[in-house]
Image (cartoon, rainbow, N blue to C red; front, side, top):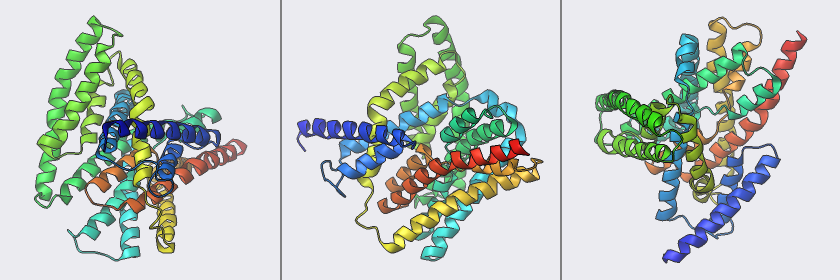
Length: 391
């Protein structure tokens, strides 16, 4: 490909992603859904204006690293410590039940495969995709209803944060298991070593950034150093520990989430991500999504995938909430609040495609889940809280 062709591809991707994102927002859907659809429209499946290339893949990988770094920066360690064991148990069940549900769905639909086979890993990874939670839609809904700081609202937020941490650990473990040269014990050891090294280095780096932040507050060098840290952690995670690069980027964000200028770093990172890299990442999902292979059988699987994805979050999070003492329809509120999916589900699916655990045609199921969960969650929450108010 000629170098100047890259500029054409970028121009087409950015303008189509932003226009479709704005249309999605007008329709009360997440903008990422519009950006994914843009990639589908301009990609080989429809108009054929842009082809997937190594350059676009590289830009998309930078985008996903920045997204996870931003997510880490937005994590509140104080909230994690404050919520205690209830939120932790809800998060654990919110990962375990969808993981099992996704595995059983794929296995029942395509047949149970022996451990270690490609089909077995595809079944497991289907469950891994369902573990992700994105509560941005839930937060907006609770804020509009005036229940964001209620007991259920706080529980949903805290459990979602822990849910993402556990989900990333599960993703790291499963990807490690796919490596034919890896052993389960080695994967566990590498994972533990990574987080141990991240803890030690994190404390040192946190103190260094705290010093720099105090000496040079609100200067552009702080977010630049932060992005360097994200890339360094992403590289080190993959290179030295066999851990997914997004895990390293997320941990880098957590390291810096408590410094005074963490919000300033997040804003600067978000600008770079929003303007260039994130649209390329989400559009690249659409470019890789193949609708040519859509068959009645695959369509039925997509529908079942959505149903299982929604129900397992309600059963997992809502069920354990009831056992932990939440009464009335509060357990259902927590389960419904945790069932939205977003960028993390797409990031996990993208990783699965890279390591050969899923095929590109299954992105249709993930996109459908994001769209439906984003639409019905606010409606269900409004209904549940209105019933509580009347009672």
